[in-house]
Image 1 (cartoon, rainbow over the protein chains, first blue to last red):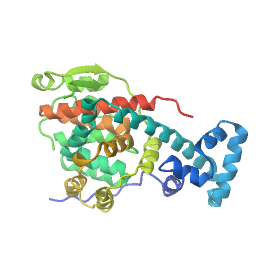
Image 2: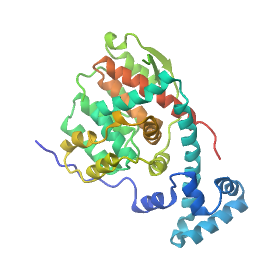
Image 3: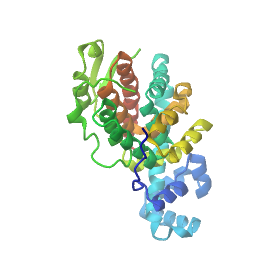
Length: 182
Length: 139
């Protein structure tokens, strides 16, 4: 028996997606290249009203189609800078773990691979394929209604970005051992 | 082998609901988490640099999937077990504390063997590092 995946509303609007594609930079170098200044200078501009005004004007020149969205784009760039810093910090923590602990990240990768629903969720989030990921997970829950996979899968889905409903909503109802897993 | 599970209060309740055999031998350490919001995860996903073609092929397959039954095939397309540590760090950074919390709940709710709890130990350990990172001030 096969089940069609039910249509669903996209979780990220086309305008938001365009903003993410155009104004999120993979690394410090690509951001500095686009803005024509070092990241420390961009951060300094964010930290004063006058500087931020100057930055917004520059972004409008860089992309005239931004129009009324320039504040949104500036917020996104600010978040991007924060996450570049967090990424650097996280990598330093992971890469400087003692040998035994460093082995752990490889083990974690094995466990994700071993649990197909986790592997699917990892692909869906990392490759930013959320609408179809959420639809597939919802469809599996319907297919397996009442089963262990459906309940634990519903819990997992509730923690994914842009999932509808309350995060962790099913936890209280399913805190009991469930037979079987993927 | 990691023997410590870093669990929230809710997760500790899930763990205590498991059979005694599954609970045996693990040390539970209480943890509180700093979760990301959805926009942060979106930004991280667009920052990610997965250079392996498997990921792109799996993304394409997921974007065009029309049947729920395709999920197992798609999930098998990316060999996470063969990822280098740097690639795994990239993956867990993108997934965030939030998605990893979903993973840990999934594993605790469906645990049937010791390896499932071992997976919780490793993933919760990485989650703790990322939660600490999330709490660091930046700009």
